[in-house]
Length: 393
Image (cartoon, rainbow, N blue to C red; front, side, top):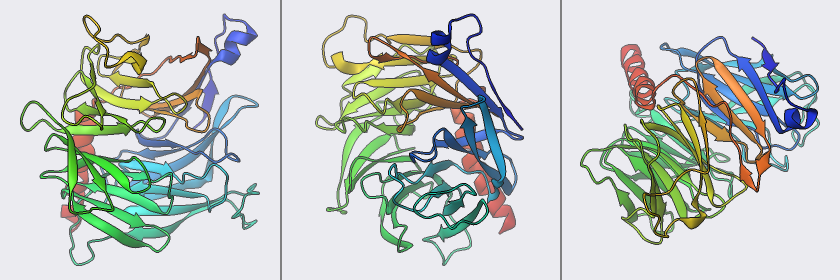
């Protein structure tokens, strides 16, 4: 499939440079998605399929900014067991490490990427391709494994990846030695997401309705930062502010609000973002600003918030500084950490990346849209993995 550009045909050249939209259509429904951060691989993303079968796909695509097309290379498209719940490129901006991509489903897999035009640190000079470097399984004595719901790659110490699972655990892997650093029973119920906050600190959210922070220097204890006010209300997504690690945000399943937390003051939200009219599905902290966050949901709204005034009394609650109304429910989005004026979204079989300028220092956002509700997607991925693996076993 191919990509196309959709610049603002009615605007000036400057407007076109300030607002660019590029679309790529995959041959299957897209779920997992991630930006590459390598300086030598600008505009590169990984996308993964959501197919209700064992055999799924992952593609690595790249925007050719000379002609505005997002291109796929058949050599960089590969089969993946089960739908990938998440995909992340190695956090290596300076290209000092092998070009790696990690994915999660039944197990954590690490893939090595070779490009025919690769002049990077690990270039072999051979043809383009992707090969599995390692498959990381900490449950070798059982035929059944709890599917991995998510994972996060430690930017401060890239040998570490943390995974979350429906079996209530979080596992910290040393991917260089291909061994487990530690495994913790993190929650009372399924763990839905995990995020690093530093070299040895991570947080997780769960179906038990809590946000818990763990310090690997004290593995016997955790700090409960937040608990849902209603019993048995799952928290399904977690975002840790990389620019100001005092703050994190979480999504409550089937809720129209986003809870922003200050880890210095556990249990009580520092602010609740409550301008969505339907369930929130996605959150993304700005990679270049400590006080901006984007939220998106089933109300077809993408909202950008300036949190610099949070903690101060505001009559009626905080309002977003920017809003965009899409044509359908918005499922997820990602902000590029290497190129923070670029945002990527996936809806149905389409990947869309867009570039926006800024007004008065605040990021803009346009044309984010999707069609699948978050709860349906979460249930589809997790329970489809369980069903398929049970049938095969």
